[in-house]
Length: 206
Image (spheres, rainbow, N blue to C red):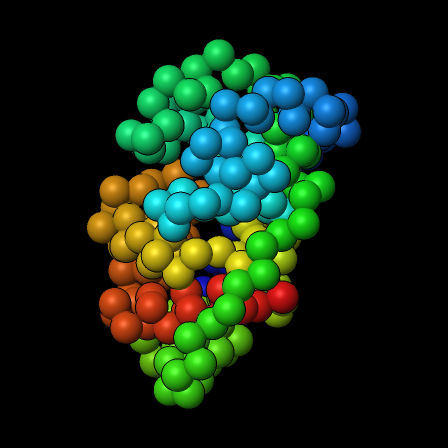
């Protein structure tokens, strides 16, 4: 697992380097203008009004830009996004990502159930090595802010429902735009209870 994570980090670092110029030229003002069509689902400043759609505020630029381009190019299928970013250039994707990255991230309130929180913290910080589940913190950082250079997304403050749905999609293979199958491999080893616990924990993580 350590070799897989190291290899993935190297690969994603190379991908990030390939887009360095676009990232450096990202224009938040242009992104705000382009993001007007995103507001209905993701909120004007990236705080979504509905758990069916993720918060984008404070998200790593590299991750948001990649998702926009993956959806545009058909590498990630999101029915609700059909046609929404078809006319986006790569630079548009980076501009929008820059705009949302500059916004204050959502701060969530967890379910205080002790056992739920304990299991969520255990999985996030230590994983479950007996089942081959690595610590989420290894890629998403102890505070859940993600790692932009490796295109690891921020998780803190995200809706429980959205996080669970994302893990379920990875586990089933319905979502398949994770490099080296890393999230599909991990999510497939998680129970529904594990997903709920981790999702609740990261909601309040910051």
